[in-house]
Amino acid sequence: MAQLVVETTDLTKKYGTFTAVNRLNLKIEEGEVFGFLGANGAGKTTTMLMLLGLTEPTSGTARVCGMDPAREPLEVKRLVGYVPERVGFYEELTAKQNLRYTADLNRIRRAEAEDKITSLLGSVGLGEVMDHPVATFSRGMKQRLGLADVWLKDPKLAFLDEPTTGIDPNGIDDILKLISSMAKRGITIIFCSHVLPQVQKICSRVGILSKGNLVADGPIDRLGRDAAAAGRYRMEAEVEDLKASVVEAVRKTEGVEEVEATGNILVVTARSDMRGQISRAIIDSGGLLLGMKIEEYNLDKIYKRFSKEA
Image 1 (cartoon, rainbow, N blue to C red):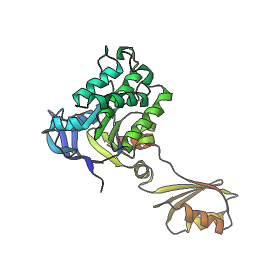
Image 2 (image 1 turned 90 degrees about the vertical axis):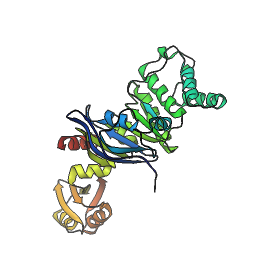
Image 3 (image 1 turned 30 degrees about the vertical axis):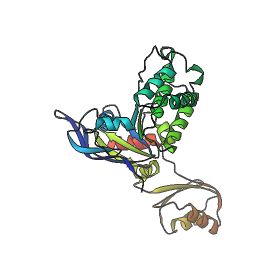
Image 4 (image 1 turned 135 degrees about the vertical axis):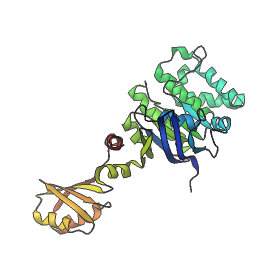
């Protein structure tokens, strides 16, 4: 069983009569890239602050790397990295000097740190400007430096808040690959972003917050089925010269719940992926199958559906 890096039980934060986070129950395993989604004011930042030990919950509990961030904030901070939406560095220092400072704070030996700093700055695309003052960096370059800064300390968990903001399109893929490689090395990532295609590309699971409540939590394909068709699969088959006999054969296939025919297209709904059985029914009934695909779920639609129902 994978180790839990984050576990919350009825985690709640209130400000007077306003509930920012309401009884949040969340589990995130080691090595996951977890997409944490929600509109501004949904409770994401408040949740992150509680997990980082920067604000105390009103009620409920949180465990980060096995520790309580409210009672052991310094220990948690040693194991956790955080890249805010707007990264701050010492502007007059170079990229390399800023990372040396981080290495000193984390008691990394200078000889070990030097090789690691050079390698990381190259990995995030800052190898040629590592000796330039950060004051000369664009916002996107500072985001890259923020990722290098987090990775330098080898955290167990990293919070990334809009990490691709301000980065040119060509650099975004590099950053997403870097985040994925961090996860492959066992670093758990909580990825907050409003750019849903990026979330869908790299996250193994997502959680959606709305008005302080966790309204959805799970793999994107399952959430898509829940949002689109109450947990069902939808498969689309293209059949040359689609005849009523073919439609009827598919409809009678065990496990098929609904069949819709439009022109040469069959849309089949079932509780499981039945592409094999449907293909066989079409062929056995004399149909010529031209192609078949299963419905792909767009995270944007999933997000809008669950947020709307909150």
